[in-house]
Structure formats: C-alpha cells, structure tokens
Length: 122
Image (cartoon, rainbow, N blue to C red; front, side, top):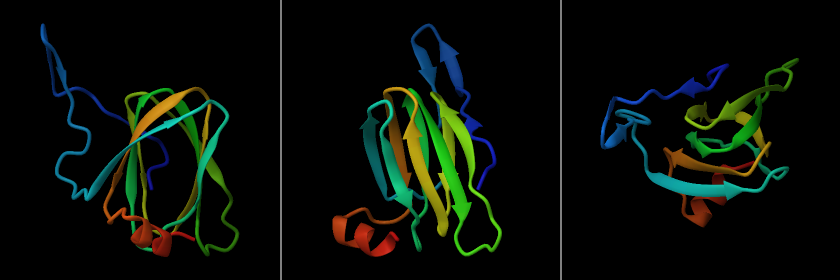
C-alpha cells in the first residue's frame, strides 16, 4: 500500500492532446467506471484475494485504510485527486468518502462478476 497516491504524468503532450499510461504492464481483469456524489461513501470492506487500483478522472476523495488483523493498527487516510492513482492490496480494510462529485476507474486484478466479488469481500 502506498502511503500517498501516485501522480500520473503524461507520456507525451503535443498539439493533438496527451497520452498517459495509467498502469503500464499490470495484469488487469476488469475496468469499472464509477461515479459518486459528494458526501457519499463506497467500499467499507476488504478483499481476501483481489486487489485494485483507483484512478481518479475528476473530483476528489478521501481514501481511509487499515491492515486487516494487525493488532494496534490505526486507520489512516489520504486525499486522492484527479490524475492520481491509489492501490488497494488484499487484506486491507478500505473505505472512500467523496469530497466532491467524482468519477474514477476501478482497475481490478480479480474477476468482478457478482458471485466472485461477493465471495471475496468481507
């Protein structure tokens, strides 16, 4: 788990626009586009096996996390803004509060059909 979100810099910029590599060579099995209203909360769980990246397209969110089963561990939080990405490994409790209207990509390493997803989260 990164203590800070990673700022994603464009690979190239020219008169046509920009090209940005969000993840490079990571194995991704599912890409979800998620929109969230200001003040709403998502997640508030952990995954037994799956991991995922959250890349903020627009908006801002507070990502709260804590390792599962680590005695004495306290919740920590980090603000993730547009153009930044945060990684969630397995066995990390996490919740997200949206500080403004937000759109992000959830890039997952595990299958995201409903049955598999429900069996993986706690």
